[in-house]
Image (cartoon, rainbow, N blue to C red):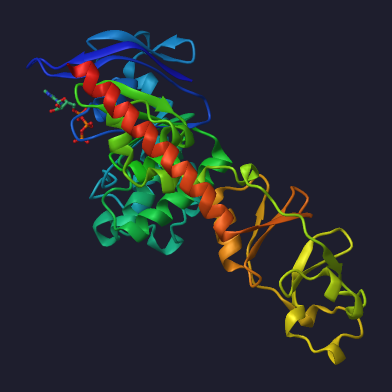
Length: 385
Ligand SMILES: Nc1ncnc2c1ncn2[C@@H]1O[C@H](COP(=O)(O)OP(=O)(O)OP(=O)(O)O)[C@@H](O)[C@H]1O
């Protein structure tokens, strides 16, 4: 765990970059610092590894006061990744990654073997390992930067806008791989970005900062979207936050309709009575959905013999009771019957939901959010008077 305790940084010219920051970055989680340019994100990050010395306050690494450890020792346990990777231009990719382990006393040969392993982990093809950084794309350079920080296997990683110098498609790939890797490694990560979408995607918790180095809100992405602390946060998180919040809003709040199902291999003659608006949901012996049967499209003379898989329309994504409003909407919109199929944790059918029911829920949610934003803005205006 990293803990900021009333940390302030005032630069010699008087600029107050960080103002009494209190915050904890939990072990094994990703904490994202986000905020407009100049709000003190980078200064906060660099105070953790003492590249910048706080003017006052303390930063704890677990139960150790970082001011009491030699910076070189402190930094050995802290990986650092920056924008445009910050690679050594005259060293090959593998040499770049092996640099820190060699400095830490590993033999060149072991460091090289480990570097190749880490490069593989971050998805960089082995044939690129002998190239120089200038011979790589921006996205590949970022992967090398992440690999270099991981090579010494530090428990803590500081990442300063590591993906911002690449195009949006590559950035999305790097973010996905970063999350996959973090799922395996469980590092304690502090990540700086000015991009609220990146913060929401990557953060277990997000610290929104405002200019003057003050913490505006520290919250989970879902909470930030649904309950911004004030008008500044609401504005920064964006006008469409209500719709983004769908990605976090549990579909379990939705009113589900229970409907009859037909068992696979059961007699087609009996399905008409189990169809709703011409469609019947076929399930297996465990009540797990298999597909929709277009009963309305079958002539009476076709209604004999068993229900077989080739008769089923397999279209439509499923959503779970623990799923999100966005998944529920996808399920409803992609279902041939117009009814989204909802299953429980074991994949068993529990009910259906229509797109208009999901949209009604979204609408009421959005108006609550709008109302909250208006009230928050009103409170702010009153406070300024
Ligand atoms: N060495 C310095 N001397 C004086 N002021 C500085 C110094 N470094 C940063 N600042 C100022 O401190 C404030 C915070 O800067 P910092 O780089 O931490 O912000 P940031 O949120 O990371 O910004 P950005 O997103 O633009 O990188 C800014 O006003 C900046 O101009």
